[in-house]
Image (cartoon, rainbow, N blue to C red; front, side, top):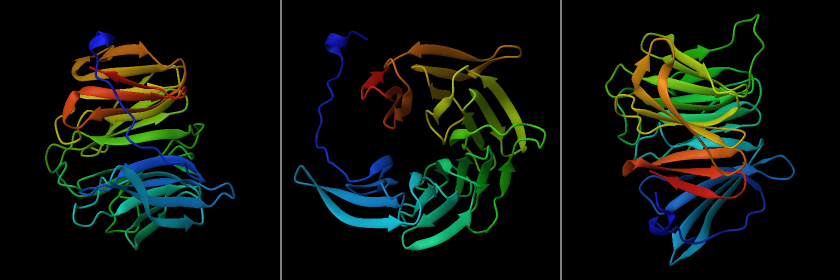
Length: 282
């Protein structure tokens, strides 16, 4: 893309906070968002902000026992807007007022994603968590225990799972989970067959994974890593020896912490780097 003709990104509003923000999510069907993180005294921060005449207004502030690492509305119905969070104590909670809580992992819940809520994706609403203990767990909040646990073998050294996401949820039975690990491993699990569908290694720790859309047959997978690299996999072009077709790019000259597809146009995606910059790609 010619940068002289590229879209211009203009900052609309900013807000200073008294905690370290780890995640933020728009509240579905509103002009509000929730910011999550950790206070200097290691307690959890959860603050709700709303846009009001070009300014940010604080609507609610909550302090939790443990720092909050990640959150998602992905498994919640639009009318409920229940937020699922993962914290530094390994607890996964789902709350409006608290409605569900489980000891999901032995240590920090590094990543969380939801599917089946917000009228996005088929099948039952589910939450997936990835933890420092190397486990990926899938939760149905109607039952107290995980419905699927993907754990390393006892003889294996547990690798830190840094990121998880749902995808391929195009009917009531198909659904996949992708996990990214600190050693560069990417693993795709088929929840219908309860099996490992594909795995690869990209040499650098994987900090973020996302499908271009959850509710279609898997198409593209965006993977961002340490050492300023990201990859886009074509999940509809598979070689029996080389795996899925892939494109690799360098950006930001630092860790690429986030990668997100534009919901309205999945040919566009943005990356956020440790240098404080955002790059928009097509």
